[in-house]
Image 1 (cartoon, rainbow, N blue to C red):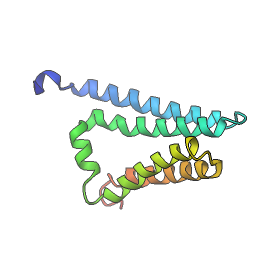
Image 2 (cartoon, rainbow, N blue to C red):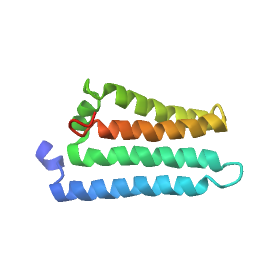
Image 3 (spheres, one colour):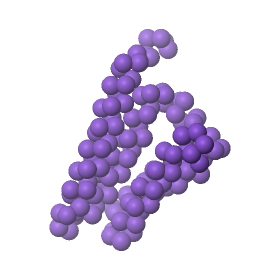
Image 4 (cartoon, one colour):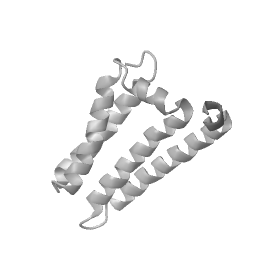
Length: 127
């Protein structure tokens, strides 16, 4: 079963590139939608968050889902993972449930830094 469901390296790279490109496109689209009157900040928060999730998800193609999850929650990057996931969730909560524009923008900024910190945690000796 494992051999029948595993992807070849070329397919994995194509999946990574496609998913990462979709993530970048969503983030760029969110930035453009920021200037839409009244709903712009909510649209920005949604598309920016979806873009970050797609970008993180793109690495699933390279490592595989289980290895990615194990590496995400290793002790050396546990705090970075938790902060990043918390920022993703709080961005959407502040946009949809709390409807606080200032908090939404703050959590988007924190989301950017949390994702950068999380990404750097995968580079040896970068921490």
